[in-house]
Length: 256
Image (cartoon, rainbow, N blue to C red; front, side):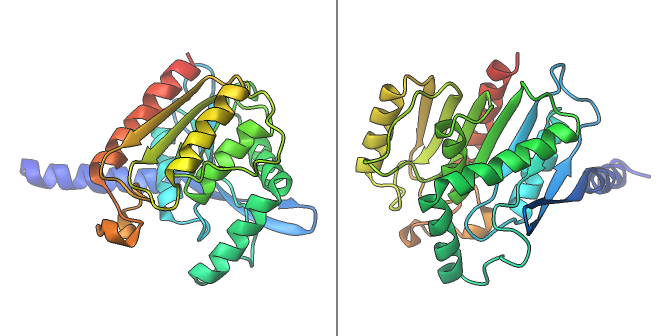
């Protein structure tokens, strides 16, 4: 057996092992059935920290599941939350826009779905005092809502999420540490929203960071988004890798 064959076997074994970590978890919000996905670390970090992962507007996809597996490999209990619920996965962008819009407007319902996911994460073994929430696009907005709603989380990470909130809504103090990862050329999050977010974080007396990535538009971590920036949403390898490393550094500070 040569080195190439050995390498192939190792890759295949790693993939099988990684997939074996992820399991579906049934839970509910009153009469609405939910199905999330749990990734349990084989070697949890010292504090048994946990991370809730919030999906983008099209519902749970492989992207969130892969993030959960990668986080578990880093030692974190990881749970992909089901915000929409079973039977509500959008079939197209029009349906996705309506669903996402509903939860953005009814942010207390969104915060409740996030809390239910946190409960599942703790039930699985994560330390209730060592929880973070991350999210992509619509889920990135949700991560910020976890901080705005003052859920019991130590920190949140928003990947190319919407940053705005209703200007008439009260700005409360935020205790969770905040990391927002933003594409410099994202047409869905204009400069005025970025400025308003910065002002909100100052008013909320938050410990916050905003990383802005050059030549990146919306959905820059999604490999299936193509590479045409003119469409407003596209994958950007540099921004993807840099934002993931920024999150890891953030977690190292947060959980140590």
